[in-house]
Length: 88
Image 1: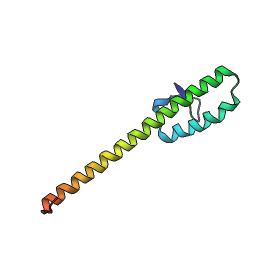
Image 2: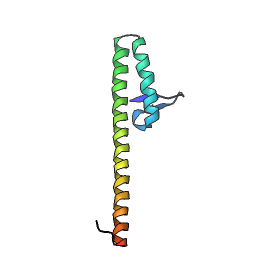
Image 3: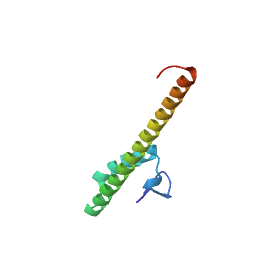
Image 4: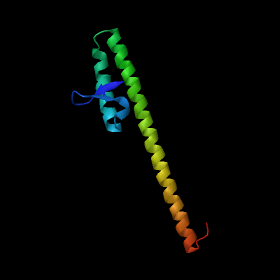
């Protein structure tokens, strides 16, 4: 599914950053009460669901990266302690 940011160029939902996805989600939710007909409302609901899915994925990827960074930092600390002779 494609969405529009601030310009006329369409962007795939999968290409949105977290901030862009939140902005598009807010705008789409604001458009929902103003839907022209049932088909338009259904399209907006589908768009909202896809954007929410992208946000969930982006947030889980950020959390995964944060955990990997923490694990790397911990491993480095353990190695440094080992080299200094500090018992684990």
